[in-house]
Amino acid sequence: MNAYRELSDEYYVNMHLNTEMELSSDRETLLHFFDQLRKLYPSMRNFYNRDRQELILEEDRERPGYRWASLEPRRVCSGYVNPPAVEDALAQHRQVLECVPYLLSISGLDCESLTLVYGFDFTYRGNHNQLLAEALGLIPAFDRISFHPELVLTGYEPALQFSLDRSCRTHCRISFETRTTAQHIKTGEYPDEQLSVYVAVRRFGSLDTSEQFVDVLEALAAWGNEVLDNYVVDSILRPLYETIARQ
Image 1 (cartoon, helix red, strand yellow):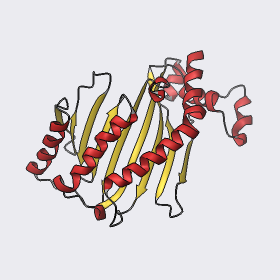
Image 2 (cartoon, helix red, strand yellow):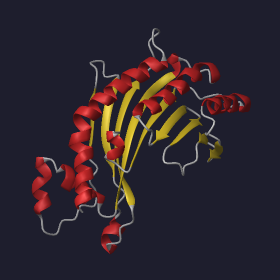
Image 3 (cartoon, helix red, strand yellow):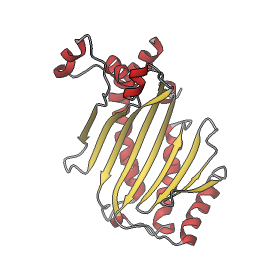
Image 4 (cartoon, helix red, strand yellow):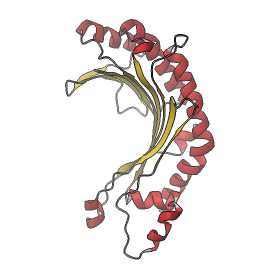
């Protein structure tokens, strides 16, 4: 059983490589990168340019799970929505990171940051802010406010960021994104919007001379797995899932 998939409506594992220098704008170089990726994953056949700043190659979004990759002037991204297992997404990210030094001329020196993001979406028709407060609670300093009879939460997106090493080069951020607006609350008309939970593990700075991009990805994945399994699944995802199920 895929615990992440069972406890959310959708989940995804994305990788973002940010560079200090802009990528080449050469048409042949960019198309060659996507052609090589399509050879690895032939079903990634939808190619388009968004806002003239982002080139995207992806599978059909109507599939239960789909892969995507994109290039921006200073960023390479790879993602997998609803992968059968986290390892399937990581395997894709490894393929991309193994290609970028040769196909896009990105060296470890040029790395501004490498990020692995685990995202979880919960579809909920109601006040996302109230849902978070009910499922996860408020910090003690705010707890008394919640007892005010006229109070309706219009904004509640807690976030926690912490370093994972003494050098403070590797950070983890746990955050939430609610999509309930004041207009929704005022009218009482709530659409089926998604409440998102993000766990992002990020390594800052250039790679050491002995490191490869894949080495850093493996370290981020190990940290991400530990944070998710020990601190997120039972403390955040499961309470949200169970609170929504009771509504």
